[in-house]
Structure formats: C-alpha cells, structure tokens
Amino acid sequence: MDVLNNVLFWLDIVRLAFIIGAFFFQILFGLLVFLKPKQYPKAKKYHDFTIIIRARNEAEVIAESIDSCRKLNYPKDKFRVIVFCHNCTDNTAEIVSQHGGEAIEIFDDNPKHLKASYCRYYGRQELKKRGKGKYEYFCFLDADNQLDKDYLLACNDAADSGVLLGRTFENSKNFTENVISCRNGLYYIRDNIVACGARSARNRGCLMDGCASRVKAEYALDWDARSSSDDAEFTLNRLRKDGKKVEYIDKAVVYEEQPTSISERAKRNARRGHGLFRLYFSLGLPCLGLFFKNLFKKGIPFSTKRTYLDQYCNIAIIPASLLASIWIPLYYIYALIYTGLGHPRVIYGVGTILFRHLIYFIIALLCVAILLPFFLQPLYCYFKAKKRLFIENKKVLVLSLFLIPFYRILQALPIFQGVFTNPKWSALKRSKKKIKQ
Image (cartoon, rainbow, N blue to C red):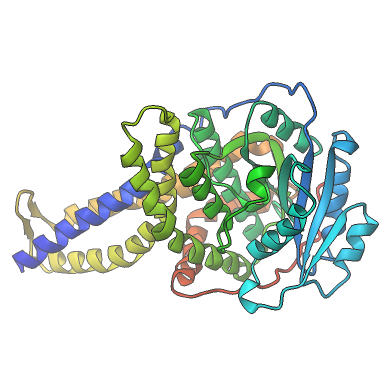
C-alpha cells in the first residue's frame, strides 16, 4: 500500500500544480481588484459605428433593444443599427424596420448551423458585399440587451486612443428579479472588475464576450470563429494570428437580461462548457506554445507575451475544473478512509500524513477554493460597482450574496455536461424588466 499511496500522492501534486497554474491569473488579479482600469481621454472626433444585433424570433424584446440604441448620446449620422434576423418565423424583421433599424434576413436550413456564430457569419457576408471601407467600428449586441446612453461615447474615446478590439462593461437588466438572475448578475460584475478591470490596469488583454464587444471593421468583417464559444475563439485567433489583444472599456455599459431559472442558466453553461473545452486543445495549448516561443524575442511587447500565457490559463480553467471535480472527491475520500482506519500514510521525502493533517488541508482547500473567489470577491465587487446597478429588491440581493458558493457548485455541473455532450441552441424565456435611464 505504501507504493500505491506514494504514487497517488505525487499524482495529486501534479494535479494540484496544473490547477494552480490554470487559476494563477485568476488568483493574481483577484488580489488586485482595487486597481482602476485604464481610462481613455476624450476623443477629438466622432468615429463611425455600426451596432449589430443578433436575433432569432425576438419579437418580444427587439423593439426595446433598438429603442435604447436610438436614444444614445451620439450624433445620429455617425451610427446605425442593423439586425441579423436568423431563421425568424415571427415578425422580428418587421418590428426592426418600424423602430428605425435595418433588418437583414438570413435563412439557413442546415441544422448544424443553429448557432449564434453562424448568424453573425452570414450577416457579415451580406455587409461585405456593400464594399470595403463602408464601415469603421462594429458593436455586437444580443436582442435582449439595452445600452447605457453614453455607451458609444465611451467606445469612441477608446477608438480615438487606438483600441481595435474592445470588451465593454457587462451589466444586468434584471439584477434583482430573483435569486438566480441576481447571482448571474453578480458573476458578471465580478468578471468585469476582476477578470477585466485588473487586467486593464496592468495592460493585459481580456477575453471577448459576445454581447459586450466593440471591434474594428477589418477584424469584424473577417470574423473567423464559428464555435459555440466564438467570442473566446475570436480572442485567441486575434492573439495568435495578429498579436492583438482585447482591451477593456470600463465606461461603456451594456445591460443584459439574465436567466431567471436554473434550467435556463444550465443551457447557457452547457454550451459554454462544450465550446471552451474544445478550444483548450485547438487554441489554448498553441497560445502556451507562443508564450515560450516568443518569450525572448525582441519587437513583441512584453504585455502581449504575458497575454499569451494569461489567455492559455483562461481556457485551461474548464479542463482544470473538470479534473478537480473528478479527482478530488475520489482521492480525498480514499485518503480519509485509509487514514481514518488508523493507517498513517508514509510519503517518501515528505513524512507521515495522519488523519488530522488531511482534515486541516481539506478545510484550508475549501476556504481558498470556495470562500475567496465565490463569496468574498463577489461581495467586494458588488460594493465597488453598486452605483452602476439597478437594485429593486434588496432581500433578493442579500440572499444571493450568501448563496453564491452553493450556486457555483450547481453552475459547474452543466458546464461539465457540455464537455461530454453537444448541447443545442434553444430559446430562453424573456423577462419583462427594462432599464429606465
């Protein structure tokens, strides 16, 4: 048994090293949440923007999304709204026209193309036919989104500062509708402040997110990502092929509708898990290779070199979490039973591990892995961003804050389900909540 225990112990050390490596930047930037993201000076001119909205049978919400765009504090002749109506069987296109947008109807009966990425792909092909140089910047939204009235002004400041690829602040339209929507909203707030804000402060690139994207036309029209996680795929492609990173635009705020049930959130997470797990092997590992390949090369900014490693770690989180969820229960249950029966585990080069040592380690592991990222960080991020949030029910907020660790465990299960399955797109139930500015 000593040989088996030693083999399992050192396998656990390798597993632990892989997981710590994958979460290294999450931990690092989690400790730097107090840093302020990069701010862009006031633009000297107004750039041209095209707001793209993806829609599939969105007659219920598309009008308010377009109306929020029409109310932007930006010259009306410097932006336009185009909606890609993908296989719509309702009157979405008609509503778009009635509210001042342009509808591009796309009909594709290939069942393998029932993804948002294909909607965006075919819509861009139509735009490319209109001639090169017609568009300058694109902002990508979903049909249930609303924009802050100063959204384009903030995007314009970033454009004038030379930002080619941008991710904006992703807020919640129905933040305290119920515990599920509130928990989802808190996740995005933490993602903005920890994953994006701290990286921006340190001049690192962040991960593009579909409905919070602002992209230079030359990259948007040649969007080369069609997986179920096309935003992450696009981020990694630009980094690998062009050496370009996605920069964070903190003052540009988009309000997204959050799922209000566990089943609806599970559908999103399953698709995300499916896409990100496959991207780890196709694009994540090549990013790690580029980090080592370019580490000592001159002419490549060090911030770009660090972003190679950072984005590898971003993509590695899914396989690392999957490994942890399988290995940790099996290994530590075995170790607890073995030592609890009075069999101290003798590890060569380490010493004797007793039952109480395992208990102390497991408690410390749970505190670090659950308490810090899933409770303390979201709590801090809420107080840091609360002036931006629309809070209608404080009781829901308080309950959501305390249930965060438990909800994260439930959230992980459909992500892992997506790793082993190929989840299909399905319509989500829409909320009636709206942002009144």
